[in-house]
Amino acid sequence: MISLNPSSTSPAVQLYPEPAQVLDNPALSCYFLPLMSFTHEHLEDQQAYTIHLFGTEGLSCISPRPYAEDGIHGFDYNEGRYRYLGDPAAFGEYHNVSEVYGWLLEDFNRNSEYYLHEHISAADYGANVQVALNSIATFDSRRYAEGIYSYLYMRTHLLMDRLTAQELGQSLVNERSHQTQHNYHLRPEMIVGGTERSRFMSPSGQGAILAAFDADTKQVYLLNPSSL
Image (cartoon, rainbow, N blue to C red; front, top):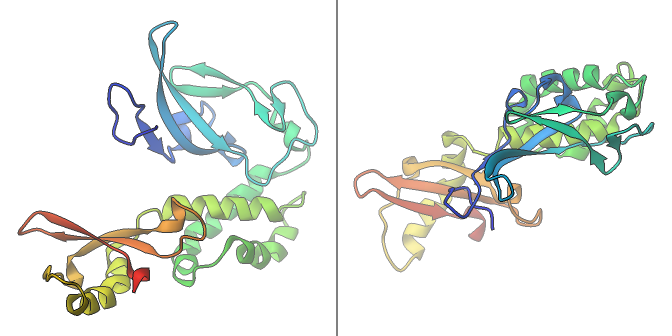
């Protein structure tokens, strides 16, 4: 079992590390999206290594090369970072992946609050930007756009901001004060943040998990508005 709290028997885990932390050429993050890093204690040489996991969303190797094939990519390990041994041209010699990635990143940074508020799905996003991408991309970029959007959305919005969490939890706090067997004296302003359950669990597990903090008693309450 992997724990986010490192101990002598479990690796330390970092979610969504920055490209510069894991790749000696961060520009390759348009192909390799950093998902997770964890420590590995190698028994043979008694050394600790930081292992990185990547996603290659919406891309396939249309021209396989050594160390660059669908299902396998090779890297040199150098002081905690990876150097790609393959050739990005394996993804398509004339595919302008980095340019499309830059456009998607700029679009997301500019409109992320709208996408979050409206709960825009990856499929809808891909359809909405397809016309714009058709004038930019030299490859079929629909799946790639959906994959990058999902990655950026999840990475950016793992933690729900306080005001959004309070808005979602207001009715729960007000109604549950009359429904629970005990009175916990919770108020909406005590809600400090939250996250979408589907980010970590089954996609069918819709709804948010919120945290309310009582600074006087130093107690934390987990709230599930979808249980109403």
